[in-house]
Image 1 (cartoon, rainbow, N blue to C red):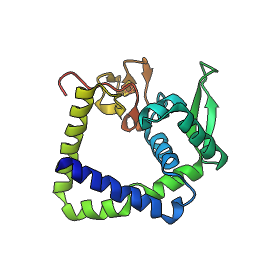
Image 2: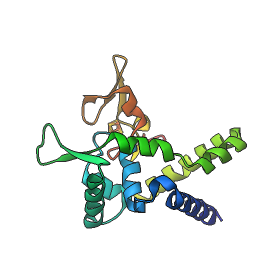
Image 3: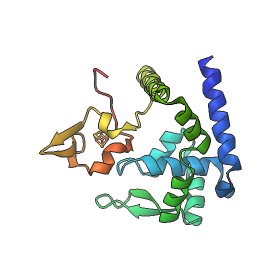
Image 4: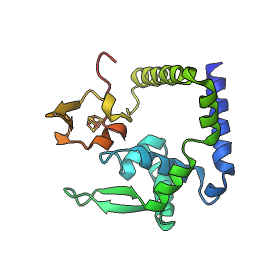
Length: 184
Ligand code: SF4
């Protein structure tokens, strides 16, 4: 039953995106890569992280990233410390595109009609996701502010893993190094 519901909602979402007039030029995998890059932090915007997140082969992801680069939707930037590593940065048109299509209108309207129940549902789905991640040992890709390494040092967000300060906006992004606190 739960599976049927999740599958139906995923299917509706896929159809909505496939039929969206602003997205006719993008393959589903290209859109998924853009969506991920629009939500991830600076430790997670590499081709390898996109591959892990989407659960696809390196070759498939690499082709999609090249296509996105060709469309002017992302640029590659060498890492400041490790010149062999690159970061994938969304361009302004890509950001504007994501702002226009996320979240899907039908979902916004439905959650608005549900009122407070929508918040309860969100919490329950988060609980489900955490349980699956814990049980299956899959990569975290969780929200920075819920990570066990997330700290507050002298009033500023700080990553205990990388030992680097975090900007306020970064605590709302997802990270491939994320780990849940033991008690979560
Ligand atoms: S605190 Fe956790 S989620 Fe945030 S940047 Fe560090 S490792 Fe990533």
